[in-house]
Structure formats: structure tokens, C-alpha cells
Length: 155
Picture 1 (cartoon, rainbow, N blue to C red):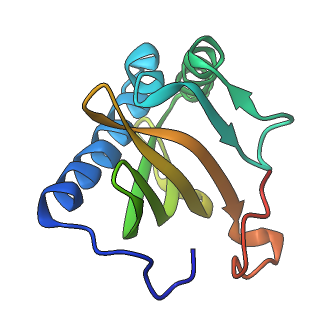
Picture 2 (tube, rainbow, N blue to C red):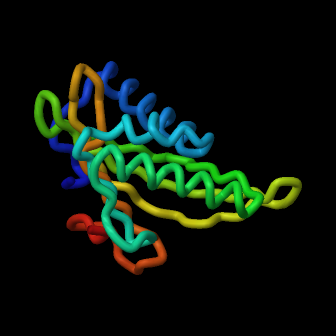
Picture 3 (cartoon, rainbow, N blue to C red):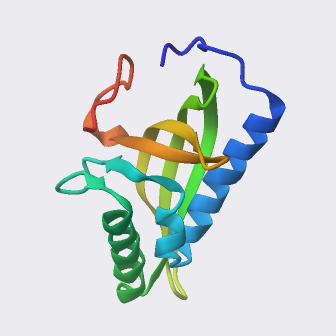
């Protein structure tokens, strides 16, 4: 992603991408693991330095989301993904590059909220079966010291 935009994204695609990201956040936060995994392609990839290895494919993504929700519940917390500053560039007719800031907030049930992580996500989004799906997500933690310029440092 150049930061200056590779191609125009129309209003319809813009709204569809915002809906995809909003849906994703609600699904993982509310424990709908299989539905969250279905927002990725069948061979979708999730790369994050917060986890020991990339997560690839529907079954692994489902288990990843299930474990995320279970860990929060076990800790007596509600976790929320807050995605902002979404930047969308068209790569091709059915391919987009999307970058956004992601905060993960944890709220202890009956208690205070705290910022768990502040990250930048860089996604390759493709149209599959008439729907936008994430083919590859790379997460860069802000505490990693990288500026994010020039590529993905999470893989």
C-alpha cells in the first residue's frame, strides 16, 4: 500500500467493507467463531506477532476465534475490537488493500476497561462468492517499534 491510493473505490464497495469489518468485530467479540472465520476466504491467513504462529484456513480460524472468546470469558472480561481509520485502495476488480487501526479493549465484568493492544491491520480483501472476504490479514502492534511504512512486519 502506497499511502496515496492505488485505485478508486466506489461508494458501494466502501460501505460493504465497513460492514464486513463491523460484522467481524461483533462476531469475534460475541463468540460466533465459525461466523467470524467465514469472513475470511477458505484459505484465509491471519498473521500477528501476538500469537506464536500464523492461523490459516477455516478450521484453524474458527478455533482461534473460539479460543479468543473463551480466554476473555474465563478471565471475567468482555473484549471489544474497535476498528477505525479504515483506508481502502483498489488493487483490481475483485481485490482491495485495506489498512485500519485496531484497538482491543478489555472490560472486567463489573469493573473498569483497559486498552489491551493498539495495532494496525493490513488486509488483502477479495470478492469470493459475491462477498468480500479477507484473504490475508497482517497485524502490526504499535509497541513493536515499527512505523508500518513500507510493508507488513507481522508475518
